Amino acid sequence: MLKPTRATVVGGSIGGLTAALLLHDLGCDVEVYERSGSALDARGAGIAVLDATVRYFVDRGITDPAEICSSTQSIRYLWPDGSVRYEAGHHYRFSSWNTIYRALLACFDDDRYHLGREMVSFRTRGDEVEVGFADGDTRRCDLLVCADGINSLGRESLYPGTSPVYSGYVAYRGTVPERDLSPATFAGLRDAITYQVIPDSHILVYPIPGPDGEVEPGHRLMNFVWYRNVADGAPLDRLLAGRDGTPRRVSLPPGAMADEAIDEMRALADRALAPPIAEVVTTVAEPFAQAVFDIEVPGMAADQVAILGDAAFAVRPHAAAGTAKAADDAWQLAEQLAAWSHDVPEALRSWEQTQLALGRDLLQRCRDIGERSQFRNSWDPGDPALIFGLYGPGN
Ligand SMILES: Cc1cc2nc3c(=O)[nH]c(=O)nc-3n(C[C@H](O)[C@H](O)[C@H](O)COP(=O)(O)OP(=O)(O)OC[C@H]3O[C@@H](n4cnc5c(N)ncnc54)[C@H](O)[C@@H]3O)c2cc1C
Image (cartoon, rainbow, N blue to C red):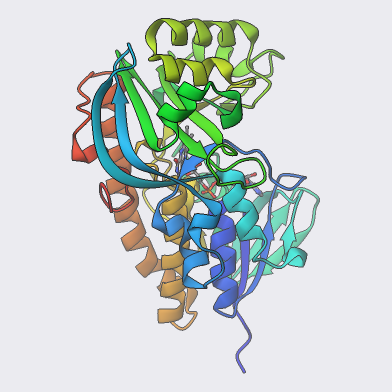
């Protein structure tokens, strides 16, 4: 019998875990190495969930998405006085990064998921890749999958200089238990994704599962994402440095935002946002922030090395497709590996073609939506282009 393909997956988040599960199911000998020293937790807040993100659970008959996602039945836009500006029936699913991560991790072998292991180098030697870790250890494999996120070492090594490009805006985010909202606000927000557009900005609010995965209305969290322009340089550095003054490049975790930034955000919410949306923003105890970047790569594979998910293309969140793209990269990778009978370089060459096209298309679509909201003020609530989707709006 042929020896199984040895696969090393670097980055144990949604993209890396999906890839690891699919490669394992294909008969590969898979190990996952995650830099973070403790089980990833509380990473971000809510996410809109497209089919690819939960495809593993559905395809393998593991979990009904309804058990790990909340859902809404309409898209609603409010005017500043709280009256309805636009409403249309549309079904969306939402979850939290934690809920999806925990569900994926539960499907994977604990002994093959290594925390506190940071890849610091890799090099191709013949038809093997030798991966080096910060602790001095090395591992040889036939396939290295770099699912190592926005500051990917895999990307920087294969395509030096393809750095994240700051979009000019930041997402302020946070969650509040539904039970902490007033009855009127809970009733107004519980069944919809609720938007408000204000000059050079927009905000969206939607329910996500509770801290222990609760999906029943009343037991969930209400999540907000508010896109606000912050100039590059000192203003962005100051925001991300937070209360402890730590220099940060991408995000400011819950509990770290400076009091002045929280006060400014709450004051603007009270002045400019519709009452139910303002109540969510001002009730959140520990808001956090993530700078929004574009990353575009010229390629996604070389010999035995693939880069996927945010490591390859990081797109602005306006199609809510980041985790779906990472998962789709993983599904297509497994399909090509099977189609090429585990000939890794051939499989990666085919895979790269389709996934590059997908990444470029999504990047462009999300960049356009973001520019229209934040800089051109040309959002039309009824525009079908604004519907979430991976392959196209609503798809
Ligand atoms: C404001 C905002 C809103 C968003 N909303 C949505 C949404 O609604 N729906 C959606 O689907 N997506 C959304 N996204 C995008 C989504 O969060 C990302 O696309 C997704 O998390 C990417 O997954 P990933 O596995 O590729 O990378 P990541 O989740 O970034 O994971 C990378 C992992 O690699 C690890 N790592 C990094 N370097 C190393 C190393 N050298 N060695 C070992 N491990 C390493 C990291 O610790 C991390 O765990 C949003 C993003 C933002 C900023």
